[in-house]
Image (cartoon, rainbow, N blue to C red):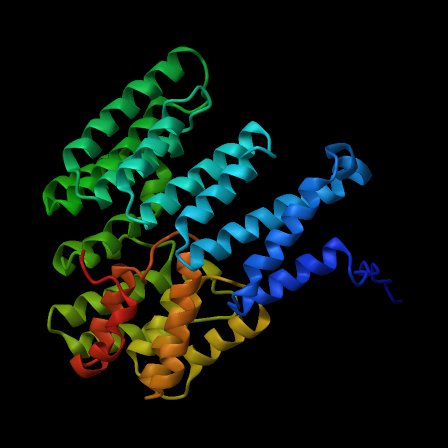
Length: 387
C-alpha cells in the first residue's frame, strides 16, 4: 500500500513568493543584495491596500511579516543595528499584542548585542512592568543585569520579582504554587551568587531550589555546569554524582572535573565508560556532551565529528553550537581551514540570533581543555573568553 504525498506549492516566477525566496537565498549566502531584495518585497507589499494583503487568509500579510522578520535577522547578522531595530519597529505594527511582546524581547537582545545596555535594560523593564508581564520577563532582566556585572541591581530585581509573584498569587492570576515560585527565585539567586564568586551562597540557593521543586532535583547540571564554568571542579563533583537522569552529560562532566583536578587517567576511564553505554536512543538534549566525550578521547575514528557533520547535512538543526562542534572536531584533526570556516559560520548564526557577536565563554572552556596554547591562539578571535 502506498501513501500519496501532498503536492508542494508551485512558486510562480516573478511572484512575491519568488522574490522573497531570492532574498532568502541571498541572505543565506550572506550576499549584500539580500537587503535590497527584502526591501523590494516590503515596499511593494506595503503599497497594497491592507484589505488586499489580508485576502486569501492573509497570504500577502504573512509574506510581509516574513520578509520583515528575515530582513531583521540579516541586518542583525551584519551588525547593522539601527536598521535592524527600525525593521523590528515596523514588524511590531503588524502583529497582535502577544507576538509584539516577543519582538520587543528580540529588540532588547539586539540592543544588548549592540552594546546599548541602558536601552536594552529599559526595554526589558517595559516588558516586566507591563500588565501582560511573565516570569520570564523578570528572569531576562536579572540575567542581563548579571551579565553586565550589575549585581546589586540583579539582586534587587529578584526581590521585585518575588513581590510581583506574591501579588499574582494573591490575585489568583497563577496556577503555580508558592514553592515553585520560590524555587525559581532561588535559581536566579544561584546564578547571581556564582557570577560574583560566592560559591557557598550559590550552592545554598540551588539546594533550596531542589528542596522546593522536583524539576531542579532532576537537573543538578544547572549547578554543576555553572561551577565547572567557574573552575570549581571539586565543588561540582558531588552534584555530578547526583545526576541520574542524564548519564552522558554527567559522565562527560565527571571526566572533565577529574582532568582539571589532575587525574587524567581517571578522566579517560570515565569517558570510556560513557562511550560504552551509548545507544541510538541517547536523547538529543545530551548530543553536545556525547560529541565532546568523543573529542575528549581524541576522536581518532571520527565518530564525534561524523555525527556532527551528519546533523548539519540532514538540516535537522540550525544551532550555531553544532557549527562550533564541527569547528572543534576539525581542529582536533588538524584541519585549521575547515575549523575556521565552521567557527565563522557559528559566529554569523549567533549574531543573527542576537545572542552575541562572538561565541560564548562557556564554549571557550572546551577549547582550553582540549587544545594546546598554539591552537587556542589560532581561533581565540571567534570567542568571548571573559567569565
